[in-house]
Amino acid sequence: MKFLDQAKIFIKSGDGGAGAVSFRREKYIEFGGPDGGDGGRGGDVIVECVANLNTLIDYRYQQHFKAQKGNHGMGKNRTGGSGEDIVMKLPVGTQVLTEDREEVIADLTEPGQRIVLLRGGDGGFGNAHYKTSTNQAPRRGDVGWPGQEMWVWLRLKLIADCGLVGLPNAGKSTFLAAVTHARPKIADYPFTTLHPNLGVAQAGEEEFIIADIPGLIEGAHEGAGLGDRFLGHIERCRVLLHLIDGTEEDVAEAYRVVRGELASYGGGLDEKHEIICLNKCDALVPEEIEEKMAALSEAAGGAKVMPLSGAAGIGLKDVLFGLLARIKESRAEHGAGPLAAEATGGTGKASSWKPALDQDDDDDKNAVWDGRTFYDLSAGDDDEDYEDEEE
Image (cartoon, rainbow, N blue to C red; front, side):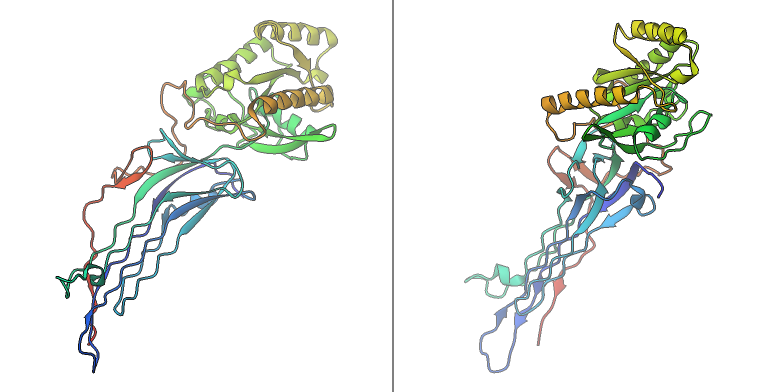
């Protein structure tokens, strides 16, 4: 299945049905009277969080989702049926954003969570509703209220406990394959990882989830390489594992490049707990390992640096238990639930987050979000009064 983590869709709730104008006329009944029923309510647009999805590919080739309209009222005081709701199933970790990507409408973090994005329009009143002692034959039947409509962005941010960061070819996919059952693509050229991968690692009797994202290069926050669009998948991580290729000439500069991109991205990534590892130690002699670990520690402000080799299995156990300790500290501090994530690509960027999909933006603004409700600004409605007069 193709991995897709963002999509733009159009949603519309159902219009309410029109009320009927009808009068009761039966043989041998002296007095008739109005008996037009009310229109039915339009369907809602609902999003549901499910556990067995991990991509938004279902929303790439179908971008319009409309709930059913309410049925019109009929004579004999028959109320129209309500329109069916439309339920969109989304993976855990999906955020629903406004069209300008500045505000989060919904954040789906738990399986089974259901949120009504747009409510259907109410049905119109039939003429039986307006019957009074002074107006015994009303001929008024209202049209139903129109439904709400808007464009929204869906953005998936994977929920994991640990996130792997580093330059391309730092050994992130090799480490993920060594400590989990995941089988990411591994090769000796940059950018072999083109989309995030997840794996479940075990330390002792406990398990935690690791997320591997494509490598970062200098200028990624400006779009260099694959850019930083995948950094959103580690916003919810409790700890970052920063891998530095030990075969690099200047490991300190490699560390500073990645840290600079995390800070430029924003979203608090540069403030998360970090474990620094000098990877590919199997290709170095002990003197080089000590020298480069000292240089890394100095660049990181005296932080501890751990030796590691995913290919040779060096230091894997120590790193896993170190990650588990940090994860337990975060759970004790923030709770066991998923961490909050930023609405957009990062608060520190000079420009707003730009999606990489070839989808056209709709210039028509048909709805306004006031922080609580979407108000439809569409002018006019083509529905006409529904009249049903029985003989």
